Length: 331
Image (tube, one colour):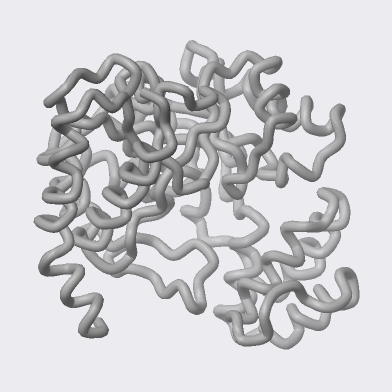
């Protein structure tokens, strides 16, 4: 840790409490959401991992902070909780998870249950019967096997010059290029990369039984779309299909139809929100680090990606998000 990071870790939580105390005493109708992906024994490296996990210990420390200082609610109740909040009451926060990952049921769920915390899991339902890798996991596996140069050549043949600053990590520039491709082109590139990535681990993905176990233990399940396409780049027909494909099987697994959606890559706009509303979703979540206020669009709610450094840094992240939201909101 740098000196600044050590200071954030040590003083971030008490400083965040001081910053938010006047907001808690106000009548502001406001709340927030946080967005995790995977959990592991150690926190991942953002410089070389596209979707690094949080360490289980860090997640627990952050969850304890959230539980101590906020009112934790399922994602489906967040907007209503923000709108109904009264002076002096805790600000509501929803804990969410994206992607179909084994650590949801094996690491996140036991920690959440032990601390009595609600959470919402947004799943794609892409691996009900066997291993499945998302496209960025294929890219990651190829890199981890030392195939970065070959990956770059194959991607540049399809995409041309890579987007972004040359100083940015190569793996992130390659992922940005692949993400921007039309779905058919992206699948073609990933098909070329599969041999470089090697076979998927046996426990890749999230089997149907894990989804069912989460639901049986009282955790809310939302939809994350079957193929994880960037929805803002799809035409009307493909967008409509993306928001519906896979829902029937997920509904059969849960015995109820998910009413919440988390947009792939956190990207959505007014057109995507309208399509989600048409598909029957009541709430939609992006990855924009924005507070949820009384005038938020239910289909365009923001979330904060928690710090990979410390509990204190997350406390400051969330405090900043909520204070900015309070300054912008009307109520």
